[in-house]
Image 1 (cartoon, each protein chain N blue to C red):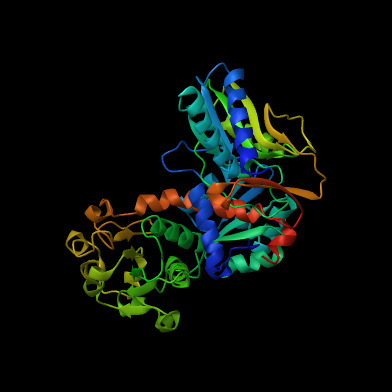
Image 2 (image 1 turned 90 degrees about the horizontal axis):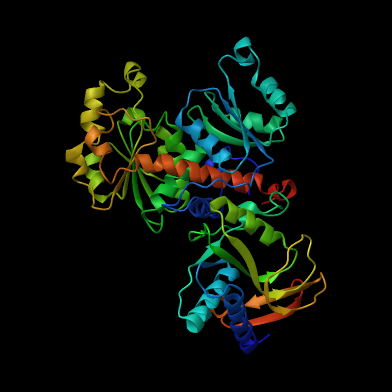
Length: 309
Length: 172
């Protein structure tokens, strides 16, 4: 298994399959939640420079269900507020003896820099507009629970792709596994380089919905309207929001996904979020399993083996 | 051991389990994944033939309980199904008993899910070289081995035939 997970492309399809299979065999469906002793001599630090509830809690529970010790390094109120650099913070944390650092940072590339400075495993929990690889893994896991294969699966990713690290990681993960991805949204929010990503792009959501197996809605960040990317949220919602009328165009077995937190009434209507085909809660549950699998496979692999496989 | 030897050993173990526990009431068979599960199912079939009772049978994954995590490549995990074990006599079943470390891990995993009345251990082959104070209650065959040798247990369900072979390490 890889030493660090900085970018979803650090993994190849076999590595992704291995994580998904391991996750499926942890915490069997319907059983009581089990806590395993696997990582009882390991320490995991959550180093979050950006606010996050679900991702930080998910990593914390994943590590705790494997009996690792978890330290939440809250950046506000710490020495970072006094101007400590990322490098100094990293060296301080390393001096305390930790095995893995889970980092979220507003600057794209911060996890890469961190990985050059520390011996510990580094897991990117979201950096700027760049990557959110564990979100992509839990999204793949959720899709995999409903479809036997990714090959040829039609996935529409709808909304603000340009500013979304989730979209970047998901596009790479899905295309790597053979899915057929289409980006849907206002041209101002689709990245111009998307043509090199091996995906289709369109502004016409209604044309895509009847064929899609998965509709993945991205969070519409409210500040985008102030920045002039969309004329108004009402117009955005009318053209690219998934409401009940649009959801009725979907195939019977099509899934609706969203990374959270939702803006109900903007990218997704309250009714659609409650439909049985909506996977939003499943995604949260699956996030813990996938992060457990990742921590187990990374921290459970000997150092010398990690370097070459 | 050929298929006949394996079959006779399992038949004898099934009788011994019933004799020791005075019947099949309160019994639960739990096999260590993967071959232990298959052997546990065979024992349950034998017990059903002899006693006419279907004993609850399950499987246990010990990967997350091993004492060598971080020392070697993490093995693939499988989903286990442990039946209710509270106040039951649990017979742990494995194909080969060697260092005893797998059984130690399985005992910890069992205790995490419940409190059995007693735990017993049945193995098809005991090859010696224990590293922990663990012994089997039921043994199909004792096969003294050198560390460099490997015991290969084959079962119809996954390998096409029933057999127990001694091989040099690296062969199979």
